[in-house]
Length: 204
Image (cartoon, rainbow, N blue to C red; front, side, top):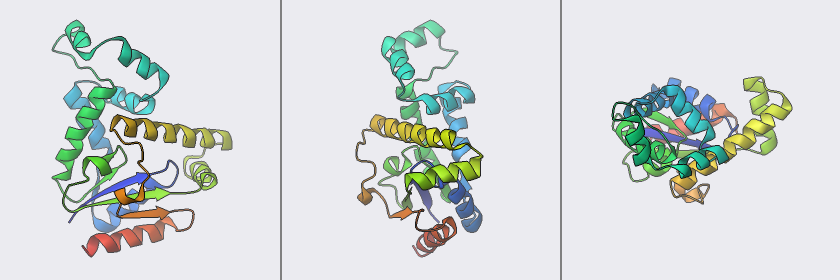
């Protein structure tokens, strides 16, 4: 049928929505597969990839990337071992997402997939937004976090999102023309959001 990309403000319910859509449309969510593929292509552990996604754009990550070149590291560790920094991550991410889009019937969550697949046929791009207070409450409810930890998680998620898009050369990533539909989950339930998306995808 199609490829669906879901971009979201952290805490707006993106992953929960994706599970609903996958069940209703019989699509596959390829979140873990992306990590596995980047790990295999860069020849590093999956934990290394997850760590890169958590810290990308942070002071330590920028410091390490700026200290030494990729070619220098590859000479030191040899051809048999892998290496992953922010540049390698973004480069490999593009390859993996383009490959996944060829499968069809997949849901891609975040990671700038709406930009990487902006010209890909039969691809629908959606963005979820919500009031900050509602996003904090969502993290408290679904991830059992305290108010302070939920607020910090929302702030950290927004920073990671901003840093990734900068690496993709995108500054105005919340501009509405990037998406087929922007949905405010402070005003519309996830169930109704899923229904609206399914109507659009099935009617294409």
